[in-house]
Structures are given as structure tokens and as C-alpha cells.
Image (cartoon, rainbow, N blue to C red; front, top):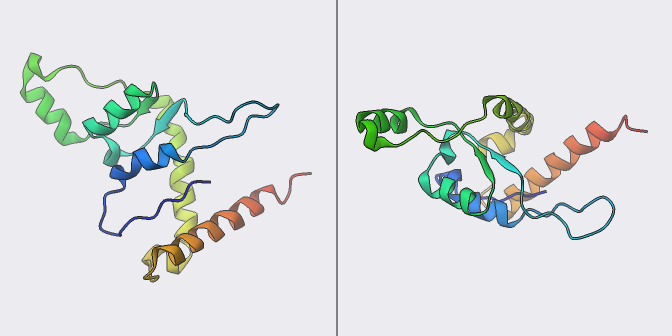
Length: 142
């Protein structure tokens, strides 16, 4: 589980490198854990050239829609604007799982409004919320 907390005014797109650095997925049969995802599904906040270049350098598929301002700028430049980045619409449909998780977390008033002044306290609330959600979903598992 990766929870990185930043200042409320900070753009979360700037934290992509730190989130990717914290990925650690154990393999089912032994071996080294996975530290690189196959793809990153993100919203338009992550549609910067810096993020796309970083993902490309790590051979990670970026499933991030283009911002409308980027589309307009590229079209204004004509043939010099380049091609639009690849975008897998079907894979992006799976992003709703992330959005539903955020919606569930925001049911906790303290998380939605961020009353906590200390980042460590807020992160503890996020972690507790995540654990409770996880326990709720595996509760019926035999």
C-alpha cells in the first residue's frame, strides 16, 4: 500500500515519481518483488510531458488522457504539433475503481476536509481507512 501525503495546495501530478518508487508487489511463488507496473492509469493532472517522458523511460504504458489545452495547442501548430500520445480507452475504463476508492475514503469527514494539521496524522487516517476497506472486501472470502 502506497500513501504519500503532500500539502493540500500541491499538485498530485508532481508526486508520480515518488509513488512509482514505492511500488513493491511480492510475487506469488517466490522471486524478486515487482517494482514496475505494466501501465499507469491516471487523470489529466498527470498529463505533463515530464510524467510521460519518465514513464516512457521506464517502459511503462501511460494511459492518461490529454488536456484540452494540450490538444488545442498541438492542433494550432499543425504538422509541427506532432502526433497525439497513445491512449487506450478500454484500459482507462478500469480507472473507475480508483475513483470509487477515493469516494469511499471521502465518506470519512476528516479525510474529505483534511482537518488534521500534521501530515503524519492525516496519513494514519488514510491508512486506517484503507485497511478497513480492505477488511470489508475480504470479510466474505473463505
